[in-house]
Length: 356
Image (cartoon, rainbow, N blue to C red; front, side, top):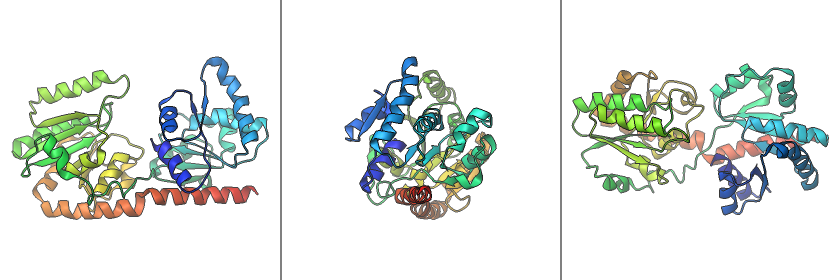
């Protein structure tokens, strides 16, 4: 979805964009619905070698001025394809996820030496690139995954839609998290904190939004089983929702308990809606929130500390209001999609000028 948003924003700004993708993949299907020009590739063993020449011929015939990939693994295809035709056009890639593998051997150096600029989506990802690859600091730019702050706007969202759907009373506080069901997202700590808080307050409801990642159905089942074992009758599991704006608007407190997150789009969206938040004190979260100004940070994997920080917001309505205003302001100033696109296009132009 980030890639599609990126492509659509470039097209909106009158840039000609063609999307190279795997045939019949989700992104291929969705891009076709949006009438985005796609170039699908097959991924059989025979096609992997063939694709090198397909892509190199495409670059030559189509006259591309710049290539930008959203995954470093694509460098294995793009760099050799560019080498075949001796193309000097800029090559940009965005690093979305950290890696624990050191990539400073001869082959990886061959790939990364061809990179014109790497976009890191947070400081922790920039640090990861410096530690695991041969890229120098001047080749790395922090470019956040932007969000549409006009869409994620408390003034046009419907706070009551979700609350009415799940019978949340006006006197009840709704505390929620939004994440795929996969280990490391902090579902366990969220439920354990809910148990602690439910013993102290009678006006709380908790909502967990999301579905199981591929192959994680057992994990999702165990999380729901944990809620039953804790005898939590005030927890709502919604499954997948595509009305994220209204879901976030319904919340009084947003919780982001992920153990390790490169950035955290859902958290940035919550800020944009103006939901006060409690977040784990690690990784990309530290680029998004400001402790004591937009949010409260808790020690990751610590449900007692999480419950304590949530309680501070439960009992202090004025603090929630303060955080709400500061969150909306920070989202507009730091993570608005226009800021991301303006920075991206500026870097593109600089690379093209330097190339010439």
